[in-house]
Image 1 (cartoon, rainbow, N blue to C red):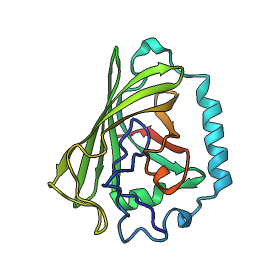
Image 2 (cartoon, rainbow, N blue to C red):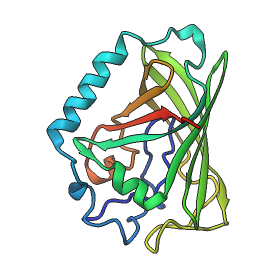
Image 3 (tube, rainbow, N blue to C red):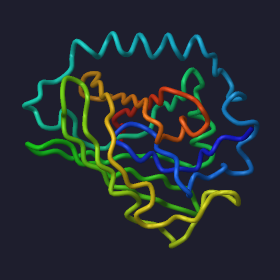
Length: 206
């Protein structure tokens, strides 16, 4: 089975799927998630647990608004115990996030861009309790060119697609990294029966 990898990472830190625009993936994504080189389930689970242990103690207080701001890039994308990072980036080219903040929370623009297609989505996150954030996705806000795709089996880019409201857990690892976890049924991973969805962003060096 091929996994639908050509979706914008439409959350502050987690891939979003579901709905009529849940693409089946580009033709050159070979074998789906299970064939990603080095995607050892135990290793992925251990890495996620280690990251959680390291980050929880450093969680920012609720009064800080948005703990991180700046330019970030996708570091890892894990569905359950399957690391799909390589396949996802092979399908969409690059995945980057501009993160801004104010007293109310975080505001993000997430962009996937290949030589033939660019999709951007806008999101707002407000801390609910502890490390849980209430996130609102306005959906896709820009398609360049209009109706572009990341492959022959990808649905055309459509303004407003994949909008929604959900809760995610965000952990902040110092000033340069954030990891988001979702367990709801609206993500790319959950559309294939995999949970949780765990996505990590790292600050761009340039």
